[in-house]
Image 1: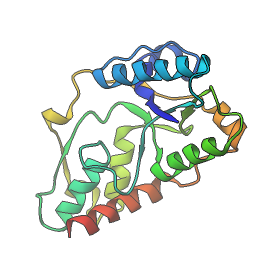
Image 2: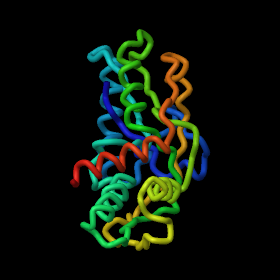
Image 3: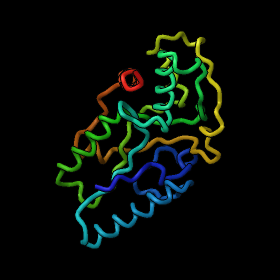
Image 4: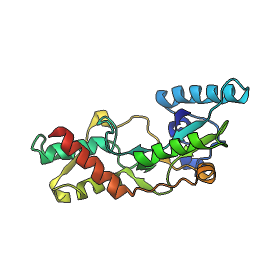
Amino acid sequence: MFCSTSEVYGDMCKDVGRLSTDMPLTPSNPYGTSKAAIDLYVQERVSNGYLKGFVTRAFSHTGPRRGRIFSISSDAAQIAAMELKMQKPVLKIGNLKTERVVIDVRDCVNAYYLLMLADKSNGQVFNVCGDEVHQMQKYTDLLIEHSTFKYNEIEQKIFEPYYRPIDIQVQIGDSSNLKQITGWEPKIDLSTTMKDLLNYWRKKLS
C-alpha cells in the first residue's frame, strides 16, 4: 500500500465538486507534487506487473498522537497548555475559513487495514474520507467545547507562520469504491475525536 494524499488533487474541488480517483492530479504545493510523482510511479509499476499493490489518498484526519505542527492538533496542544497555565489564553491559528472533511485517524488506519485484507484492492486507487465537510473553525470550536474554558475566554489570533500563502479552499472526496470493497464507514464521531485528542495533549504536557 502506498499512502498518497488528497493534496495531489490541488485546489480543483471548488470547481468540480466531489473528487473522484480518476481525476487528473494537479497538486498546488511541493508536498502534493512529491506525492503525486510516487502515486503515478506506483500505479505504473502495478499496471505493468512489477508490483502488487494499491494507492490510498487519505483526506484530512486527526486524533491522539497527531503531531502539534499539524492543524487541529496544534489547537489542541495549545488549549491543553492553557489549561495547565503554560500558555496565555491566546490561540495561535491559521486559516480557519477553508473547508475540510475530517475523520478520526483510527478510522483512517482501519480503512488501510481492510484494504490490505481485500482481494480486489490490487491495482486500484482509493480515497479515504468521510462525507461531512466543515470549515476548519468547526474543529477548533469543538476543542474549546471540550476544554475547561468558555468560548469567549480564549482569544483566537492569526499567527503568520500558520497561515499558508498557498492554500486549498475545499476538499471533499468520493470514497465509494473503498466502501464497496470493504464495507468501511467512519465509526468515531468528531466530538469524540476532539475530546480524545485534547486528553492526549493534557496527558503529554503534564
